[in-house]
Amino acid sequence: MDSISEVIGAIRAGRPSASRVHMDGAWGMSLPRIQGIGFHVVLHGTGWLVTDSGSPLPLRAGDVVLVPYGKAHGLSHTDQDTIHRLAPLELSTTRSGTGPADFEVILGCYRLDHSQLHRFLRDLPPVMVTPLDPQRHPERRALIDLLTAEVSQDLPGTGVTRPALVDLVLVDALRHIADRSEPAGRDTGIAATLREIHAEPQQRWTVQRLGEIAGMSRSVFKRKFTAQVGQPPMTYLIEWRLNRGARMLRETTAPLATIARQVGYSSEYAFANAFRRRFGVAPGRFRARMTS
Image 1 (tube, rainbow, N blue to C red):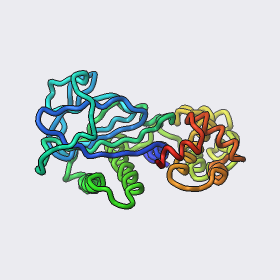
Image 2 (cartoon, rainbow, N blue to C red):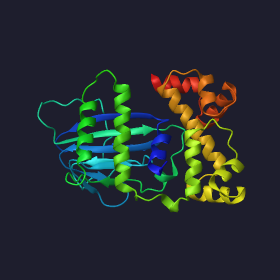
Image 3 (cartoon, rainbow, N blue to C red):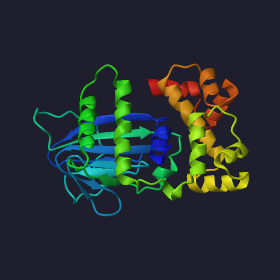
Image 4 (cartoon, one colour):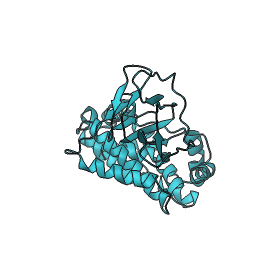
C-alpha cells in the first residue's frame, strides 16, 4: 500500500463533512484550527487564501486548497485582509438572489478527534494550493462536478456517496502534491510487511515475524521500519488496528465482539480498553456520536 492510500485509510476513522458556501460583495471568512485534515474546492469566482504567515495566495475556479493538519486560515475577496480581521464562517447564513455568487467554494474536512495524523500529512506544509489544469487533469473537473452535485442536494445514500467523494478529492490533491515515489526510499521488505499488516491486522504479528517477511533480522527490521514509517512496528500495528476498528464502528453495524476479533483483539474487553486509551471515548459512544 502506498502512502496516500495509508493516509486515506487512517483518516476514515474520523467524521467527514462537506458544505457548499456562497459569498457576495466584500466577503471574507476565517476558518479555525481543527483536529484533522481540511480542503476547499473553488467552484466560481476568484479570491485569496490568507494565513498568519506569508503573503496571501490567489485562488480561482478549480483550485483545491489542502490543509493537511487543520491549521487556522482564511479566505477573502482581497489580498489586503489578515486572518485576524476576518469574521468566523457561518454556514447557516442564507443568501438572497438566484444568480451565481461572487465566490462559491466547497469546504470539506475529516475531523479526527483524538486520532493522530499520518506522518505523510505532518511532513507537508500547513496550507497548499493545487491549481486546475483542464488539459492535463480532466478527471479533476469531473470529480469537482460530482462533488458539487452531491453537496448541493440531500438525496438518499448521502451517507455513502459524500464520504467517498471527499476521499477522492483528498486523493486527487495529495497526488498533485506528493512525489510519485515512496517517501524516504521505502524498502521493498518494509512495503511487504505493511501490505501484510493492512490486509490481515487480526494476525498475531510480532517484530520477529514481520522481520522474517521483510527478509531482515529483528533489530535491522525494527530500525528500518521506524525510520521509514515514522513509528515502531508494534505502535504502527496498534494504530492500524484501532483505526480499522473505528472505521468499522462508523460504517457498519457489526457487534463489538466481531469488530474486536477482525482487528486482532482477543476479546471485546481488550479492544474496548485499547480503543478508549486511543480515542478517549468508549467504542459504543464513539459509534453513537459518529452515526448521529
